[in-house]
Length: 434
Image (cartoon, rainbow, N blue to C red; front, top):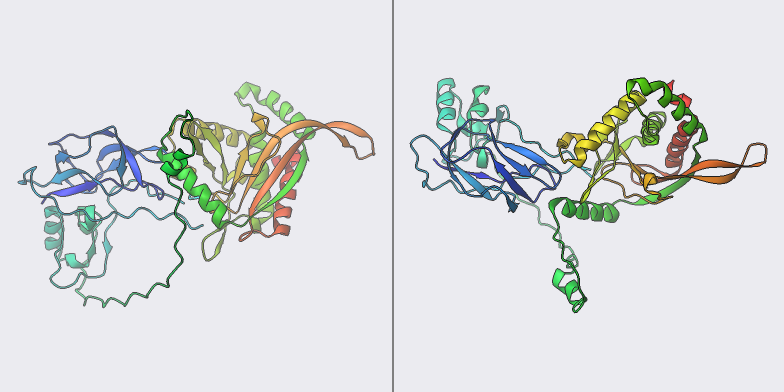
């Protein structure tokens, strides 16, 4: 039986992708877990694995094709004895991985080899069971009822991995479907302004039309979601950096022989990670109908790339040394700019940092990346006159910080406590080594 291979949803936000490169050709025999193609998603280029065995009968989408919608047939896999012109089984929609409640981003589903066997509710009597010949032979040898096995192949087809480790399951009566509740009528959402409507406003004016790529579409959708659904509030503080700058210069001099050079951002990451441990109620994420309080400080850091940004996550940041955080951040930032990060490296975390200080921005308000509870916007260090403890006027390096907070997760007093802990760590950098 011929089976269609569909464009997969390799991330929860992916609606379409670019088939960058085929790694097989028509006539090739493939096995479960073999890499079939490289696909560009909205964030990165990822490998797509086969979940079944067979022969590539026909390639339907040539490599380099952009804008291929999720669940679109891209190739046909045939079994031994089948013709490449055999009518493939009708494609069933492949569900995308659901985004994490309330950044993603939620963790997208990375392509993996076929999942271990799982048991599903028995199919209705007389319903056709789709399974590969090898899966049928294994099931027959082990006495497994295929109607009670959940298939992990295309369109729910049962493959070798689904039955290899399965135990014998007795047949059970098909469950009676519960009546679906009637949805309450809702007011229609306002229609978005069309491109043609906007273009008419600029008739006679010269402009260049720039089509949106997958990353820009995702950023637009997620930021719209964040500002419409997250009740932001903002807390602002200034931090004096003189002690930190002197401490950093001394450390860098001592670490020079090891090739380590710490940045101010490395200290900010460490300060935030330790503050989340000192104020554990603020180390939390919104999960739709509950709040998840995290144990470790997994801190995301915004990295600008051409056409968008990534937020790679430094996990367990509270337990890592400054030099380890610095090396890891450089590695993640470098691979982010080349779009080589794996999904698990830029998804998750409970807190984020966006630093525009190196670009001369003195202060700004950052948008929370759901499901994070907060994000810290960091401005530039500016020399300013300040009042010293003895009442005299001195010049000090002062940095502005704005904490954007999700009020569903963190209340005002708790947010202020978290921001105070961050300021204390930065103004007393020696404490971060204790």
